[in-house]
Image 1: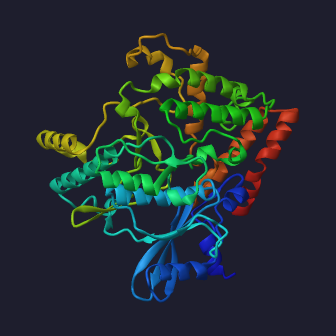
Image 2 (image 1 turned 135 degrees about the vertical axis):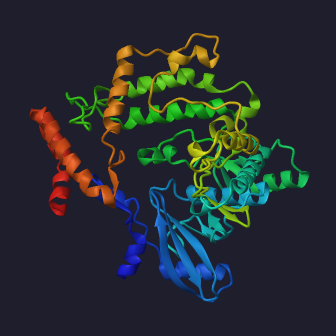
Image 3 (image 1 turned 120 degrees about the vertical axis):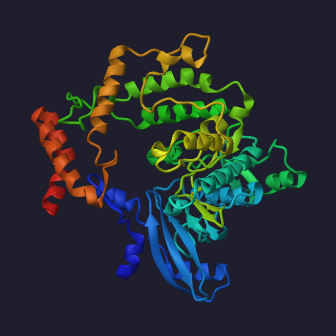
Length: 475
């Protein structure tokens, strides 16, 4: 294997402070390069592929640009081992893109070839698709006039109108009917669409188990979990709690740590993290309120495919029109109230615009962007829902309660962790932040050790000795 091929396979965009070997393994994607090039060339009738270049990589995929002898180019995407369940992840992404293009009239990249079975001639699942036409919006957003931006906003509103036109019959991931997905049901719509389109949906597509990573992560992949498809939104909401409850009961362990998180030792486990009981208690509280979270309007609970990440990096424009919408991985059929949201686009330097122009922009935005009657806004990780129960319009007593000290501890632990964020919770750091992160966590390690003794100190020392290796290697 050549060094250039190895570079194609390895993850090179950053590093991890802990479990780096495992993290890199989860993103290592060897494949048969000549075979991928051959299939790509054949898929568009070119003679040969003359070059392959890694364009970029995220947590879950690598993207490559393939150039052909006839001057054309295309994109190949290879999923990482951690992208989600084998077969399902690729099969449902391709079907979702096909549904968006042929049923909804939204322009994702056209798929030329794909295979969801990793035991193929390429040696990996893959999607070969057209290169997005036009220019990425984030590269040109400064250039157009306000009027042009408002026209573009109207384009986005039209995309969302198309998404709203086709409510489906249950909740889950979309697949092609030919993919032989276990427990899948025929896709049907209750929307006002032409009979031939209704027949095409029923003939070509099915709705099957969700391929969302949270339902397949680590040990969950081998557990008998309820992954849908779900006929009722309540079943989906409760499946979240049941999924995690089953994992805690089967795989969680209890520790005997006596330290608590502090500014000097933010990584120390808190009392609520020493065992599964606190987590299970929260899951039971969630289950008690989950059914109350749904609005009474059936339209807000209807199953809709949605693109929840419409930002300037996922949108391309050409001749003033949206020419391509990318990144459909993970877009599934869920209750509209959980999916519907406006795109993440705002006029630049809005605060500097005079009052009259601001008023005009707001009016244009109001008319051109879809906002929704109902949007749940509960901060992630905070147990304050019970305090605002009445203001949310419920006429029954809140079924859950939290003690004031529980609220206080939650806020304190959250602030301690967030104050030292130079890495994410898995220890990832971009290259430019890596040296700072290593030095910070070396100090954290020593500060925590000072407050420990005996077995606890020994366990902490063994669990964090990785930072010494990183520190010596980069000194």
